[in-house]
Every structure is written in structure tokens, then in C-alpha cells.
Amino acid sequence: MSEITLGDVVIIGGGCYGTFYARQLLQARDRGKAEFARLLIVDHDPGCQFRRELHGADRCELVTADWDRFFDTYLGDRSAHAELASPDVIVPSPLMPHLMYHWLVRRARAAWPGRLVETRPVREGPGTPYDQAAPDGTRYVSFADWLCPTHCIEPWLCPVTRAPRTWEMADAVTSFTRRLGATGTVAGPVLFQCQHLVFGVGTFPVTQVLAGFDTVREAGAAGGAVDLPVATLSSCHGALNLLHLGPLGGGSDS
Image (cartoon, rainbow, N blue to C red; front, side, top):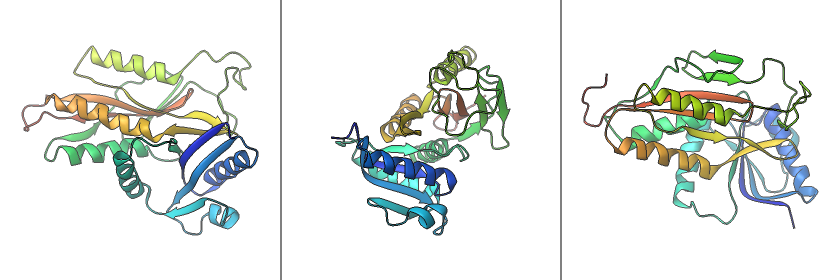
């Protein structure tokens, strides 16, 4: 019996990273370390690297689709079948946009038509050594001010410093959220936490994504303006946005 049993494994991107992750998961399955119902590789290019190198592998499927459109459909289906025997997980790419945040924004706009739902600037970071704001409003943060090894699993002993890893990005973003709450109406945070699963592959569960929208829905139900920090992160790195919900009814939002 496999040590890890999963439902769907959704790999974002069929390029070099996605193909590597798919190959590692297939090896883990062959060695009895993991089992999965389906391996879904999502890429807009039907001739991507995965198709060229791993096309035809058992229980692997290339889904040719825009990532945002894929998640709108896929996560909608998962919402209707949340109680699954084996968990579905998502494998992000280190170079992809903040897809789960984008999905939350679309879900919030669908839930509250006419309500102000927007991305607001994250005017300060959580205090990490690396902290860079992108033009789209995403803030990229990291505890590493060095070049990390490719496919690092972020062990307790950092492979670069050779010293114990004393940091945790989830704690940093949670503390950051508390600081924001001292100056305004803040809920959350919503965290999509990628953790090492097997053979160098990091994932976060689909249930964590669905729970993230539950947090947004509960915060918005009060009716007032509220900000929610949203982060996709690992132990060392993260992408951070600030989701703003205006007051219901279009009242003052100062």
C-alpha cells in the first residue's frame, strides 16, 4: 500500500518545472511511495514539454486550457464534492502568477455583484530580507537573500546557510495581518501553504483553497469594508496580495 494516497494532482504548467514534477510523482508511484487517481497537467500549449516527454503515461492527462478558466471550472466542481475519500492537491510553479488570489477575486465578485472588490497596495511587507512589489500589486517576499537550490524542499537545516531554519513564512504573514488589524478592519489571513509532499514535489490541498473563500465570504458577510491579506507561500517564500471588499450597498469606503 502506498504511503500517500491522493485524488487528483493538478500540476500548473507543462514546461520544465511541471514536467519535472510529473516525472517525480510517477517515480514515487512506481516505488510505492504515493498513489493518485489522476495527474492533470494544465498548460495553454498543446505541444508543451510534458506532452513531448511524458505523453501517454498511465493516469496522466494534459489539459490544454487557460489557467484561470481551468480553476473556475475545476474548483467549482470540487466545491460541490468537498467530501472526497482522497484529497486533491495543486502543484504550483515557482514562476506562475498568483493564481489562487485571482480565483478568490473572481469568486468574490460573483458572490457580491456591484460590491467593490479590488486589489489594494500592500504598503509594507512582513519584514523579510527580500521584499519586492510587482506592478500588478503582488508583493513577493522571501527569507532568503541568497540563491536557493533548485527544487529545495526547505528542510529544517537550510542547505545554503547550513544552520537551522528559524523562520516560517506563515507565521510572518499572520503577524503582519495582526499589525494591519491595529490600523483598520482586517480579516484573515488567507494562506495557501505549499509543503513538501514526496520526491521534491510541493503541494497545497484543494480544500485549503475552498476554505480560503469561506474566510472571504465570512468576512464579507458583515457588510462593512474589510481587507484580507492573501498569500500563497512555502516556509521560505511567498506571494502576498491585499483583497479589499467595499461596504455592501455602495456606501462610504474611506
